[in-house]
Image (cartoon, rainbow, N blue to C red; front, top):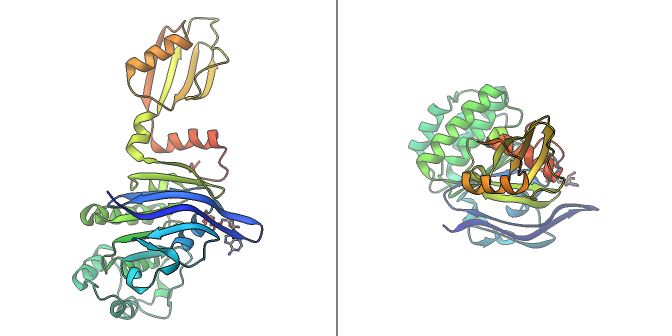
Length: 307
Ligand SMILES: Nc1ncnc2c1ncn2[C@@H]1O[C@H](COP(=O)(O)OP(=O)(O)OP(=O)(O)O)[C@@H](O)[C@H]1O
């Protein structure tokens, strides 16, 4: 799998704020990568830098094989970009807006446009100004998908949408990405919004990469572990660094194993560090639970956990 976005030591500074501080990240083709981080972590600045809307102060961003500083019409016809902050011509109807966009993209697929109109239930004769926020985001998304871009970049596309609309929007996006095999890079400050979509997870904190991993692999290596000990037995102060947030309440010791491989290896490790163990159990964790654990470990501020 080749990478459609390659960021290497990317830096972008605003006065004294290092918004992006040496970010190295690679976004593989054909997968949905969720780009997560608390408010102000540098997500929008990264996206704007890699799309040549900002000039990086250092490092490189390569998008569709092209240095971001040289991105032009030839690349932009293959990139679908939707941002929360995007300004739309609100005085146009949905149909007029699409009439305006169509000639800009030689490969615009009219049949696909019609299908998306139906799927998103967009009213062609309504002015964009009169649409709800969710519907307006759908119109923006439609205008960025109808030309079947190779790369779809969504910057916080769900913020401000009510949960029902968001859910429907995500379902639509899911169906499409699965059918079309698109490469999607979607930023969010809330794991809950994107957990159903994401094949890969990248977390940014204070302009730096905190984690980049396959979502399934991440879930495979995390377990919530409970160990029952005899009355009066205490967990030792020193446990493996791969065990996070160890807590004891009475006879029960709980921790998060961040390097789980299999039950036998875990059992061996428990016997080694908690030799008085009577029984133990290990449960798979949801991405949201993993994020809560990671957020505590990284001391991420804000709402990356959705908590
Ligand atoms: N145009 C700008 N001028 C000055 N500072 C900026 C500008 N844009 C962003 N910043 C600062 O850079 C840092 C990163 O901001 P950015 O918008 O990239 O974060 P984000 O992760 O997208 O946050 P959010 O989830 O709130 O959109 C913040 O400290 C922000 O205040």
